[in-house]
Image 1 (cartoon, rainbow, N blue to C red):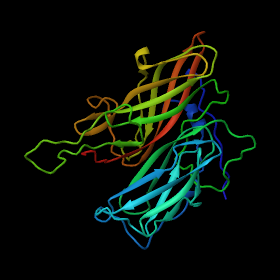
Image 2 (tube, one colour):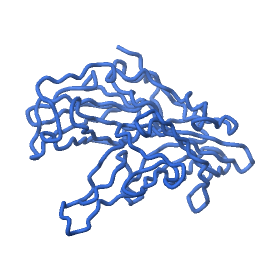
Image 3 (spheres, helix red, strand yellow):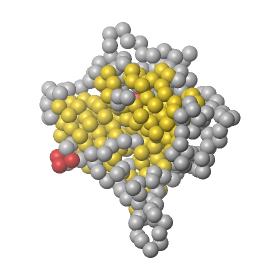
Image 4 (cartoon, one colour):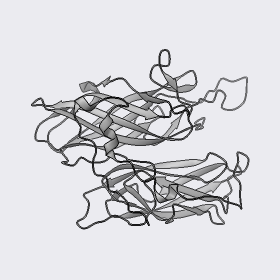
Length: 343
């Protein structure tokens, strides 16, 4: 039974420490031991999933806004290409640190006769965290949900010892002093900025219906990040720029660090007085020629080809009204892959 490590730091760091893959000090936000679900074997001898017999995987969480210390149930459903439930296939779930997987205790379990696998998750720390479930073998099928953990840590609460999860690293976590923090980090990839989630489409389908006589390409958009920052200081804080980094964008270990992306008042870069929030929305991944890129695709940009769960680290840098420097950071995990949005 492993000891789960609580992380309440959201990285209040100095501007001078910004270097390398954004911030050398971001590593202090907390790596995890990988989660108990990442250390086990998920061999499934009763079913081998492939493109022909597995249609999709869906993840439904009873409540995506959970008080710290409380729990919520979830159901994963695996269906085949005929929309029938697939029985006896192992489903593996994992999370960012802050979400505990209480059931199944090992982080994985087989589907029942209807193709369902149910479980329970719990919130260990305030913030916004990704929860992901996938098939154990064969087809690259997965589904993810953003979970918001609200409120303060209850007095005497020691988490959920022995639970799985935490293998995806850190999510949006709070500062030690709580003065300024990022309380939510999510992606928008559908062309509608109010739509947020973790699915990032990296390859456009050229013909949705297969009819060469019609031109009906899949809707394909730039990917935005939406950060919600909260200011608990007695003075105004204005953020000046956003910077992000991502590792292994091409599946070959390539790391990318963006330029400093300037913010303006039109981009809601000013955080108001005590208790107020600001939502900062910025494009980060560029859709170009049917592919998705980090950076400028016509210059030094890198095509995103790694179809995997990838964690993006964000830094917001600014100043208070009195001139004090402020730098906060957060991590968000996205599911990068080929998502069909022809419908």
